[in-house]
Length: 257
Image (cartoon, rainbow, N blue to C red; front, side):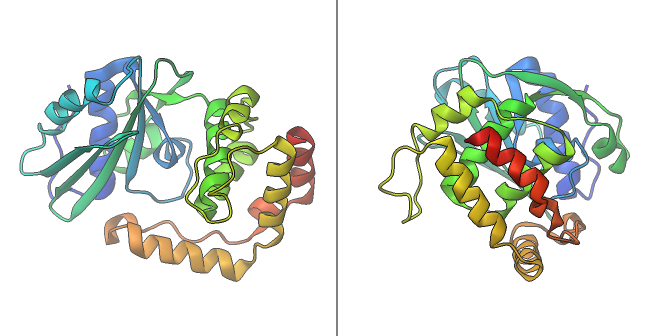
């Protein structure tokens, strides 16, 4: 049984409770993805969002009631749940902590088993094994997400997956995402398709435009906006070298072309 929430609740403590409780309640049907999944691999990028894919389901309506029931177990929490066209979004607030959960559905999704070890230990809690989206699939989706949003955090996650974790994209997944671009950016709003080579060119331009000042400013602004004081411990990257290694860029460009 998942350990009760220690009070007062922190954002990281609340994130961990959800990770463990969902693994217990939904087992292999709840697949973690996004920034919080990278935290389990010792990524230092701070986040108060949890992203899930639930399988095998065709509609968000198939999971909403179960999500509400499980999250409703948190005594004293203010819970809001809303169904959108592509996801169920839940917001939980308790004490000084607040997190957001976004859940998509799919018929299938490749996974790998990961322990919450380091993240759990930091909260003084025992570890538990959870299901995480397979790294090659995660990288393909992260590259597509960067292409559609052009956020530095997406670029950083691509770096972490490739350089730190040694992942290579699932080309089938990436090609499918590039064949159906969905972006609100003016630059891409009227564009529906892109080739790997065109994506490589865009990535190269983004890497060339990076600077130490830009990274620090963006990272600090994001931290102030998205994180409460107790979960804002991660500092800005010390150097833009995390993406600007020419050898890594050439390798990525050759694979994408």
